[in-house]
Amino acid sequence: MAKLAQVATARQAQLKDGRRLGFVEFGDPNGKPVIMFHDLWGNRNQSHPDMNILKSLGVRLIGMDRAGYGMSTRKPNRSFMDIVDDTMLLSKALKLNKFAVLGYSAGAPYALACAYRFPQIVTRCAIVSSLPPMDDPQGFKAVNANYSRLFQLAQGMESFFRLIMKGFFWIDGRRDPHHYIAELTTSMPAVDQTIMHNPLVFKNRADMWDTIRRNGSDAFVDEMVTLVKSWGFQLQSIQTPVDVWCGEADAFVSPMVSQRMADYIPNSTLHLDPQAGHLILFSHWQAILDSLVNK
Image 1 (cartoon, rainbow, N blue to C red):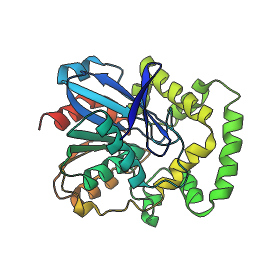
Image 2 (tube, rainbow, N blue to C red; image 1 turned 90 degrees about the horizontal axis):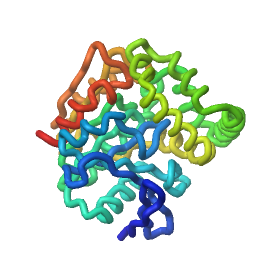
Image 3 (tube, rainbow, N blue to C red; image 1 turned 30 degrees about the vertical axis):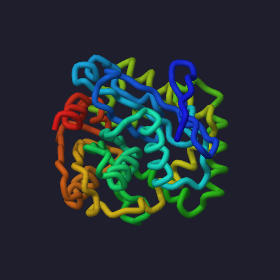
Image 4 (tube, rainbow, N blue to C red; image 1 turned 30 degrees about the horizontal axis):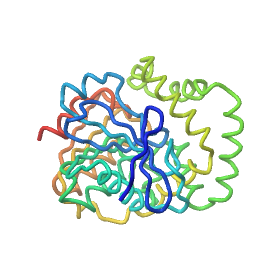
């Protein structure tokens, strides 16, 4: 079983294979546990800046660094189920008998994998602005064209992709991390730019990007290589209730992805907002968590 170690303001679980798993807890320490899977550019600290929402809902939010992110040791050639195994070891270390899962963007497939693998333990699952299965060529067509090219390189030219990302990380590492996040913000639709203009949201994103840069490009590429692999399960096989959240103004992932996933998942509820974008996680934070813990 994983052993816990206190490190700064966050914590680590010592895994049996020698790796460490970083995580942090927010909200009500005695509340209903929700394990969150961050997006491609995130880490354990990804959350809404208003912590009072967690406390008012009685939520104990547990943010976990996937292998290679934040304080978690890198695990080359990892699969979706490797992350599921890490999650279950963490839940045992925290003595959680049952918990809900929340996956945002690139974190959504991991949340679904947990729901599929442990239907008796995962009480409910929420996926927000989910990526599609990227081992299917149709998946590349459903994401932003720039990211589609990166995913295709990760799938078909991994060694070359690693060289490209090393160069990008070296160049970007010579400037303030806020610059890249500011550039990323300008490419977003107006509804998402409004959310990013919240200083606390912007700072959180910039801090997470800076951590990713310091961990190095290989860990980031590991994540993208994992995302273009098979998820290892069929959506039709998920027994856990799933809430599917998406915005029609999403410029990163087509909302059709979430709509089709909701069609395939047997016990799912689609929450589609015509006015929301990819950052619906923040605009609908309270509703997402309320559905997870109060249904």
